[in-house]
Length: 483
Image (cartoon, rainbow, N blue to C red; front, side, top):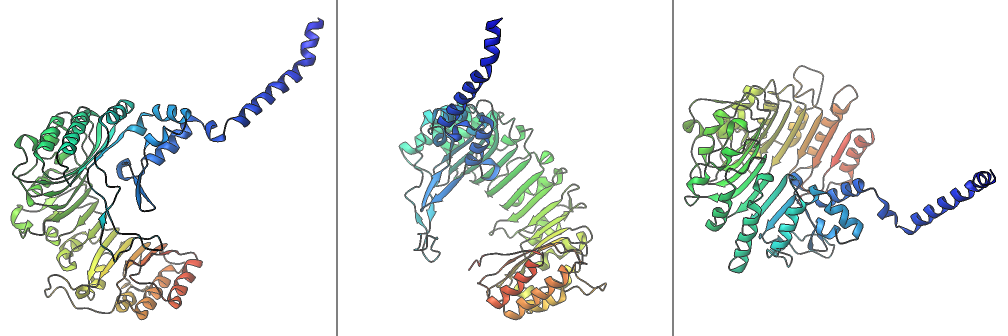
């Protein structure tokens, strides 16, 4: 009985001593070491993969490229090493880079000097990624989906080239776990032969980005390599000038062909699930799409269309189109605008000097537009005809876009606007732009956001006006001058 009473009486002191010991241990262990592993992994992930598709990123520090990678994180402490090694996703981004970096010199203010030519940096990769390191990374990635980037645009020679091939051979053995594949290289027969072993192994591939010269040396057996990729949905191909490569058009949701020969366009007739499409043609390709494709290509589920060559406006039909980006002359895209006028919600357009008089009438074709982007181009249109119009002051365009409450108002439902201005934009143009935005920012109207991208710094009197709109609540951003 006395022992029980003793334990009861001394328990508060024992617990107090235990709590004091725990507090002492916590004081000794640094706070950063007490971060929960799942939180630390999240921090590591943001440090390692902030690029497109989760690709490894590089940052410029004092003029030098610094690779942010799990290797550095795993050398901080044993705790960090164990945490990094325990998360397979941290090791799922693999990059083989033999493409040199060209940068402009840094001026006295620490910025890139645009007046100086770009030069080869001391930090250009020399393909020094050890084979053992790649093997360890692939082991740590376990069975996680892999993002693979291979950049061999400037092909190395001699031993360096042999090392690249050995890296590729090891990497291809894991191609059944590739989810994202980005290939940038010249048509190197040794590289192509090594990559041929990934055929019929790309069962997990969902994104494919190819920048390569595909000429007559591209092996015939590789032209159907992506037909065995049942999950492939996003495809980007640039630089193809040779024989056709067969693609699973019927399963694609995103297709980007910014500079491609016409033979890839024929397959679009089977792309019934396509939602995003970007089309362009090689500069040396003078063929007419309408002459090469029989009839109109109807894409029933297309929502977004980017056209860098207006000739495609003759052959595309998209009953559900919501977003249209036109990088060519307005006149060549008029057939598209007339067909989709009632359904477009977002329009981005490039306006040459010789087309400014046409712009107001074009915008009247899209009365339900919610988002508008106009990039004024100080150059004349490369080719002019009677539909191009003439040059008029930008102030005249902005005055035409002011809301008056009449049935003739241009895009009365606009909620977001972006204007990229040219160096010849004068104060009268800025005043008219301010008045137009002010008429749409009135509480009774819908404009919520505006982005202005001037070519030269704004005068104080002009910027003060726009700052007043911002102070009233308009989400207004004025970008840094790009000249």
